[in-house]
Length: 213
Image (cartoon, rainbow, N blue to C red; front, side):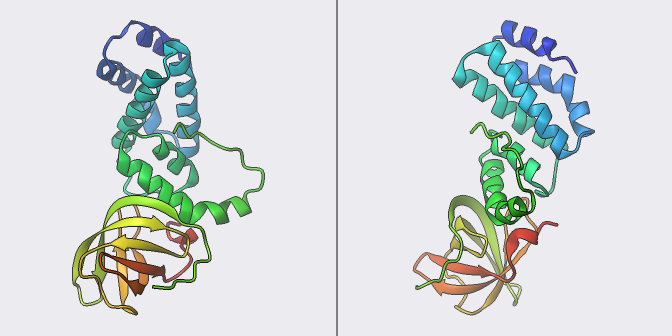
């Protein structure tokens, strides 16, 4: 694939949206036919082309993130399924894409990396509780559903492979079983291990590295 067209277009175009529109017109069809590994490699090449053509960090990053967001929206994936997809989402302009990708990597990357030794680093442009895994701060909207079919809105504040801290009002009781729903994820079974005034602590029912496979 030749990327000379992109260099010419980027050099002459004056509006970001026009550039994105032209890039999508040229490449969205090919992007649809790729798996996520090829999509990641494709976007790495696009990033290099944009940086070479513009030579302005702020503008090149903006174009890269907007283009990535637009391609993700074209694909219309219902959930995250692999490491390569997560790294694509990390460079999207959309905050939910980035936050969900971070959560996926926290829940999956540690075990996956232990299975895949020497895997190269890929594209990234940008109560008492016994914790057995480090926590990653997250800011994602979600929903907590109880076994009695009662559900309430929630927001994930941090997450680890074993559990999460979730902001919610009038949360379920300690020891109760719930299902956590967040964008681009399969429903996650969990139990409530502690309560605070505005948040609850969740322990996932099973290690979460396999919830999406």
